[in-house]
Amino acid sequence: MKHELKKELHEIIDSIEDEQTLLAIKEHLENFAVSSDLDDLTAAKLQELEKAIEEADNEVGLEDWETFRKDLISKWA
Image (cartoon, rainbow, N blue to C red):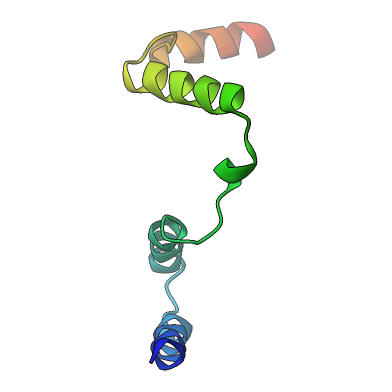
């Protein structure tokens, strides 16, 4: 049963030509993968990652587009 289901899913994916659709499917499927890059992280690194995600969600330390743009122009102009 599982083998047939995997085969059917592969056939469906193989029939999709749109790159954006394939990227969306890949992003969603990665969440269900058995192995994860997070498995290799230490507890300290996981905590650091969680803090960074929380800060990004709360926009801590992030600057708005105009400030970023002005800084970039002043640096490279």
